[in-house]
Image 1 (cartoon, rainbow, N blue to C red):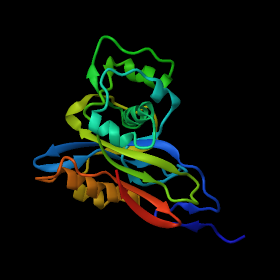
Image 2 (cartoon, one colour):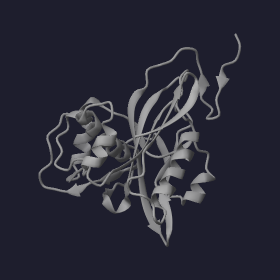
Image 3 (cartoon, rainbow, N blue to C red):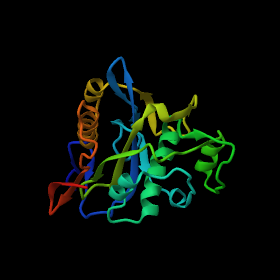
Image 4 (cartoon, one colour):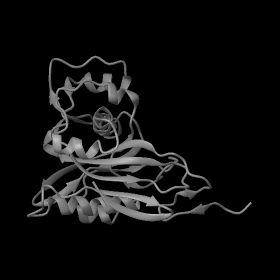
Length: 236
């Protein structure tokens, strides 16, 4: 049997095309003495997808993410772009998934303190709400979408959200999971020196462009995918 082919991100290339799963990523940004820093972490080397790579926190959307009631929704301009081709409840669920995954992987809780937390049967959200914080979606920006190339062992249709670190309500001493090791806040130049997946490197460029002086707030959202076996770039 011939050895499995490996792509530039050290991912196996397999015959056939899996249907991509909905996923979401959160890019937390802070400014430190004029330099932009982003929250990242190194994936465990035993992970089946992007093992050992430095990435932004994120993961698959859970059914509970779509059912969770929220008092702070996505801004209308953001909701329109995220919901392109999907329902608004699904778009909202993706944004909530990004916040939940960040909490689980890094211990960072994004939102606002409250004495009235929603009721849910989802264990992850119960742990989130146990800290007396509710997620706020109105501060999220939608900056990119990317679908994993076909013929990979894992495929995701990932939406990348971004917000300022000033919206962090609390940080736990330890994360709920060990998917991301060594959470860190590198500058953009430091991040580019890390072992990054190609899409993460591309999104870093988008982050820098959006945060540069004079950046257009209505800048279109890049959508990276493959069509007929070739890389394609559209805008939302």
